[in-house]
Length: 301
Length: 255
Image (cartoon, rainbow over all chains, first blue to last red; front, top):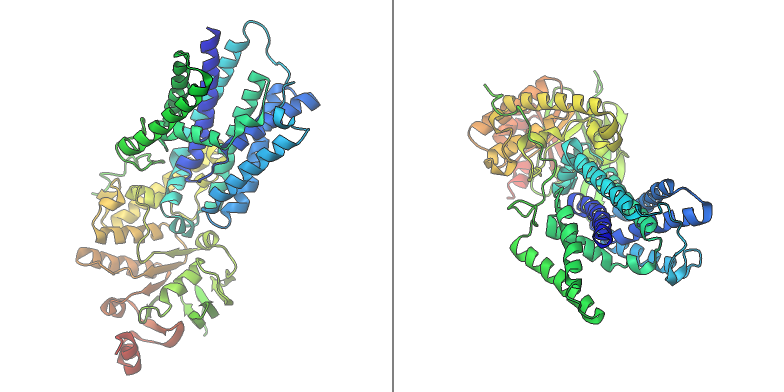
């Protein structure tokens, strides 16, 4: 039972990560590969605040999210000002650079990570309590993102992705929308990091490698990029499937490559057969802000 | 020039890309209610002038005044908020969106683009959305496209897409309207509609500037026109006078 609940917590955390990455890359069209480092900023930020300054867990998690959001604004302002294409390169550098910083500072526990994160919830109900907490956060994330991408803001994001120049020439501030979308997505990843840190009471640099963004991207693509429920389905599938393989009792040396092969084949299969993902419609292009103009038809007399 | 200040005043504007000069000491004024024609051969700098006035390009030197206020340094988005509305040669419609959504994104004031307002001041956002929707329906009716409101823009015929480009620009209720080749590829009923609406906009007090190769369209609408070539204004005058000048027609028709 404990095992199943534990998987539930993992799934919830990855729903938060995949949904927030979907906001950035799927809706916002912002090609960043640095999502794991913002996840790390949240995890390390919350852990260090709690270990060194005794900040209560809830505040530490929120602060972790804010740290990730602020860091993302720094990255966005420096790279998006030039051109959207620079974000890919800049985010890669940001991801690799900061992970090295985390790995090499004593303050962050170096390569060994941090293992003295205080326990916040103790006793027999610890795992169910964390499950309830992380699932609530996942629901809140999905709700917030669906709220953002519907209506006037979502319409603005879609228009910006369609024709950025025409969009800006209508008086819309594309730069500000990009920075805000990026900051919200990365801030939510930071909150996921804080939740992770307090649940496992252990963080290490290896968990935030650049390859982690490939795993999160797989969840987004498989479920359906630019859809509300796609990342949710993707996260459930990609956490549950590898767990199911563990029942085959393969040796660890075989297990890792087998999981890698499964991830890669799934992505390739989906790109060929169903580019819009499991949840996406038949079209391959993500569409947001499609709230229909009610009452518009039939107005002509 | 006496009388009220012009809506647009372009003063000694210069812009070059390396050796290619797209604006060479350009001076233009457009008055309230006027429809100014901008003609000249391809590569004359007509669209570049639109890009400079609307803020897509930054001039190397010179000044642009809108309603008497200096706007030369303002970024593109702020220029639109100050009242510069424009269309594009290749329309640049939002292709994945419906006609109505293409228009709803275009008012000068769009409180829904601020995330804080969207989440906290829902009343103000909703009121602005309602106002924009009413305005959009009114504009579509004037263009006889009310029925197309919910259609995807790419499903409309070309002439109608051109009209949607105009409709989107009209959502901006500012004082200056720049139309870049509104008639290219447009014929029949859409042609008549375009002509009528452009006239109505000028009559309502806007300053309108039209880049157009269709000379009869310019002749019908404009009292005054500017002839440009190689980034320079060669002559300003009535359309008839400009077309009588042999030097200009030779340049235009590439003799």
